[in-house]
Image (cartoon, rainbow, N blue to C red; front, side, top):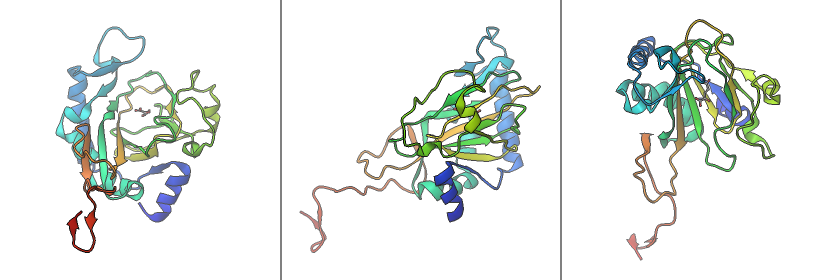
Length: 249
Ligand SMILES: O=C(O)CCC(=O)C(=O)O
């Protein structure tokens, strides 16, 4: 990410990465995902109102990083990490207890209601959507409210109501993406997605990344994978090293 792109990201809250992931990697991601859906591999979130528990009812596959190494390969691809580094710096962690899923979004899939994933006072969490299939207005692409991560007022993170009638809809932009495309956004931004009105699915991986918290004394949080850099400590150690002697006092 260039400095200019990082500036726009800080203001608008989102960034479409210029280069898509390699086609062969996307094909492998789809092949593994086909298998996961066909075998109804749990944990699964089903489309609302469905009871038959068939592959076409799968709305979301959860905990993907534990399912197959290809998902971690995509999550740690240089294209993704180089873009993230523009905002998160050199020490980046991938969360396994936030997101870590694939939105399958089969035909007629219900909207993703408006939400902001994090509170404004929390450390920046960047959501990456990695597209396994093209995402269009017709098949229910994500809508983002640019700049909403900078709002100076409080607002419920999960406003209820109809997707299109919500005032956030008027303030939002649809963000169509190509297969292999990578979309990054500040998770405090309001976002949601409309019904999938097409005949096909609309698959995308949803992943959460944060800069390593350099003040954390305990470094081996099992829910975070260090994907770039190191887990340095930059607080005030005690005992403090004596600058003259180079010894601890
Ligand atoms: O991909 C989408 O349509 C919505 C993404 C999202 O908000 C999520 O996966 O939590």
